[in-house]
Image 1 (tube, rainbow, N blue to C red):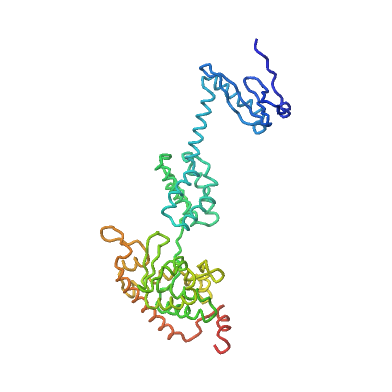
Image 2 (cartoon, helix red, strand yellow):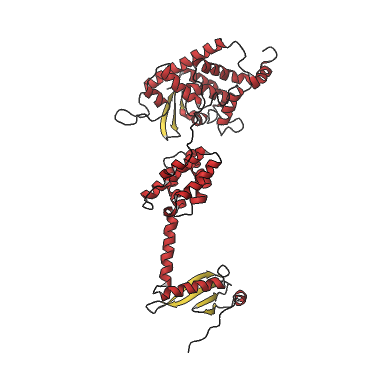
Length: 428
């Protein structure tokens, strides 16, 4: 005769106290609460497999799993048993599916893609990628299986960026999302990238080119104002950085992070690794640049950096500081930017000095290929580039002298006039 088990009550479960040895409180249908000497309470189900072997299923701990929920789990397991399925095997299959789904979630695949991108992406760019992922994509898509993501799911966070008028960020988020989708296709977790079908629904990002001065005489006036910057109380390292930039026209972060160990005073060369492409680059230094470096060496040569921060010599000056100097000279954001020195050099070298296009592009640290499609190495045409940089430096000196002769009125106007008058004195 089968023993009749009286169902448990919520109060009994709550008030069950630990004993010296583990004990069980039965609820019926094979469900029981096991109480351990340490006070832990765990729900378990005893059932017979189809082979007649007794097996145990764990349903979780109390109070996380209540009596009512434990009974529902018991009823589900009994229904599976009645359908000819082994509840334990069903649970193992569900666990395997969850693990597979977790591995193929957008968040997991995005993390793997970022790991691969780390080897061929600059730290600054990778930092931007992670920021867009964490702020704009993962909150909406991170938990979803890659196959379950619909175009509407992707469109929602992108449209939110458009509402905030962040079209550039929206475009980059769209590109990153597509990169993860393409990675998922390569891994066999997805068949089709839905991103191309979404682009027609997004606003086109208008590219705004950074401001620059392309008129030679006006650029010469800028060179004059840079020379006068130090006379008006400007930080010496900032002045030298601004004086060097027109001659070398490298990327701003490469200039401000320049180190003395990279400068060879014997060969008049600056050798460093391009941050954007992680490739070696050589900048031939004209005599005018060497003269600037000689003066700078007196001030900052005891440290590692050419252009150290005024407050902390272990950190370089910032691009913001250089931009601020341009603004104090009277140049608005619409007139000139620090990056604009590169555009000016590229334009005037080609259109005025008629220098070879491939030499200019190589000096800008752009990828240049020969007719067979092979990228030129770092020493290709080095002597030709040295000659070009000397011609360019002499041309800048000519522009500076012409501009100095042309300036007959105060070079600082508008809201900068008061500052100019204050620094020059009443006789200016």
